[in-house]
Image 1 (tube, rainbow, N blue to C red):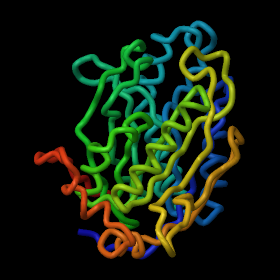
Image 2 (image 1 turned 180 degrees about the horizontal axis):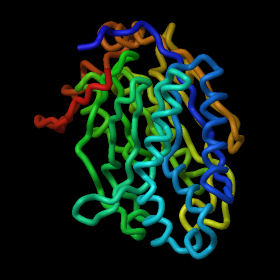
Image 3 (image 1 turned 90 degrees about the vertical axis):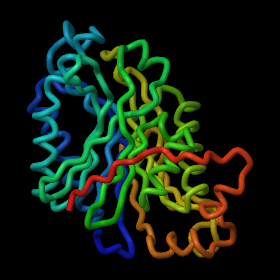
Image 4 (image 1 turned 60 degrees about the vertical axis):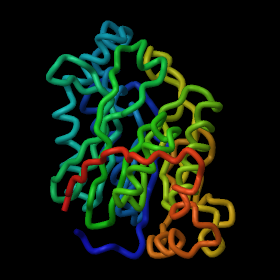
Length: 303
């Protein structure tokens, strides 16, 4: 087990979907975002769900205007995309949650996968577990299993967008040791953003943990996949005295392109689970209908 750190500064991206003309232009954009994120002093930078779809723009309208070709091309680039983020993590000495994208499995299915990358080059991957109706229409399949990732900064779970709205999934990550659950999101409407925001706040409250939402923002009418994007980044904790009265450590301006940062007091969160005003984490099994069986979670070391 890693030594538990006392605090952690996180930067969460409100990442604007653009229309890069080439992959080199896309790389320049992402590299600048990582450089600016690292300049905040954050140890972990979080990018949103389906940010990788932006790469499709580099291949012209025959690809980016066709959803099936978009998924195929972006999935084809997955290995190179992750390797590029490994270089950036090492260069800036930060941990990165790369923007998620489609990955083709060995049995021919597409899954929505996000990679947590350490400065030492270690890579952990979480696939989205519950598909939205539009993802089913796209042909994206549910992946799994749920995992937690041990790092020098603490233990993390990843609940991709819709997954954050399901209590048992995040509960399983918290019980497996996650201090922080990362919530990369991609929502077309403000109502969708608020669903994920509400889920993130609720999961933080239930489990005595921090949750970090990172959304795509801006309009990209060229893409049938990420054409409209609404949201704001947020870093959430239980609403407890001396932690946060509102449960909101930091939140961005709706639909602005920006980094949102906050320092999470991990020691205090751990005390909240044991001795807080309320004991939601400890009292989970007191609720009627609490499941006797737990969701199985894999632990991955990135140290």
